[in-house]
Length: 265
Image 1 (cartoon, one colour):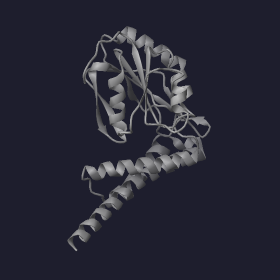
Image 2: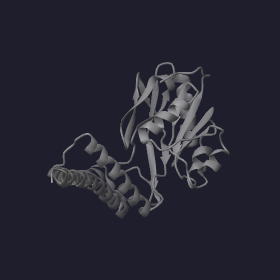
Image 3: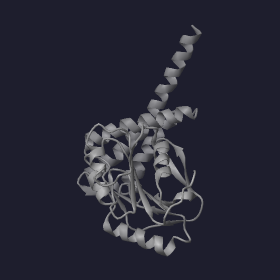
Image 4: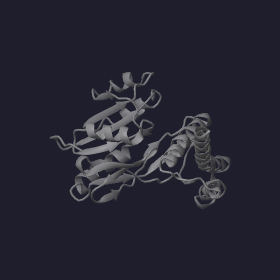
């Protein structure tokens, strides 16, 4: 990645599309950063209008996938440190203070910091059920990171030492159950296509064992049962996610087989 001359500081980067319900609170929690860079995929709501109230670095770009879109946002940052935040996330005061302190105290020895994420959903903060702490690298030196992984599980590859922070990033992942189910449908389609592109073959165990293991992990191992019915719902939807991902992989295999057979005919 080509480097440019930059002043020490921190650039917040946000990738978004049609996030008018979330983006104001997100950007409000980032006003302390030296720079905010927003990469928008041509939103059709008021997202861009709201973003321009907080920064003049609003760039519109066609959607290129999670990894490539975030890599592009990274390339547009001009400060020494980059802070990646999703549009449905907020930076509480405790985390802001911890980040600023960590950069001063440990910035010379570490090139990245990972933060826990705490989800708010169904009227509660999810400390149990497998969603917390979900550590993720979010703060990194501009010139010591690059992007890898595959959609929708892109990841930041770091050249150097990483330190964990204590306070969580607040994540408002789903508006309601309808939104949750819609996102499961979307992300399982993306994941199945990625598996197919990697020439991954479907197996019966993918549909029989993996969903059951995911349910056990969330409901029993991560104590989701202590949350009552919401804990059961969380575990069930986690299992459904896994089941649908591999069911869609199987569907892609069968569709490809039919196309090959039609071609032979």
